[in-house]
Length: 387
Image: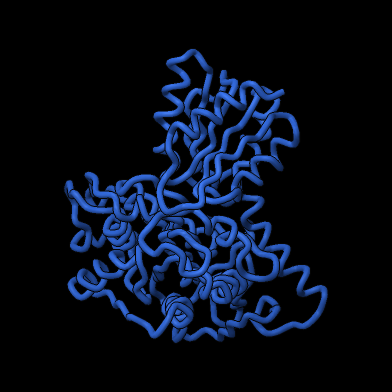
């Protein structure tokens, strides 16, 4: 429960998704943000820079994205909730430290307001080309969580959820906005602070002599301590034992990586989040996330009005992927249609889990604009004719 009511701007606001994300972070208890402004995410840190001095937070504009993505991790180990904010090229620069956060189990949030790429691409135009990078961008084996909002209201609500998930599972959480959602202005209702659920950081409460920095609980997740509170801590990106000390053995690597991966995989049923609309009796299910979940609606409604049986599955948590749902639907339907503002990323997971039991039709888009709903409608029609 959030008790810092003075920081929460309770009421109705007409703000864009970037500003709503900032307010969600504040409501979640975030009090440290480091960033290097980059379009189309700049408005997030502009609002943070304006609001933090009034509520006891600290924003630092770092020299680049690399510094930003490691500064937040120092703040977390000092006891703060922290996030960084970026877009395309900056997200690429942060990959090393996303891996470091996964390895050191540092709970933090990376906000990526996606724009068209590759490289510097189209700075002010939308895309969804970073989805696989969010999942696999750093090296080695690890798991992260990624959420994708489709409205300013969700930018507020799901930013809180991103912080809660990062604390609950001690992982870096990717908040995968896209330019359209970031710059979209809509009504955002911020509830009373006492109505906002905030997952508290789980701290170790035992004697310092018995403390092991990475000794997990029954859910594979170790409690934290704050630097300077009297506990011996050693935080390293090297393979380490439960004390946190480097341990360069195959056995230590197996034990550590197994836990880093399985603390998410074994809890996936509790993490995945999606919305369904008429999927149980559908012939075609349109799978969407982010802004495509809105551009797909006119296509779905047009197809339904013409007598086609079309369902809609919108991913709110994209990673971990709702594998069970796709496997459950595949034998019952004829096709999945997957519009993405990229040339095929999440569709690969749909194909893998459909396992040939349903056709999968990608509706690609290079970014810069959103889909024309007619293209999605045509893919629905085409998928129904496929055998």
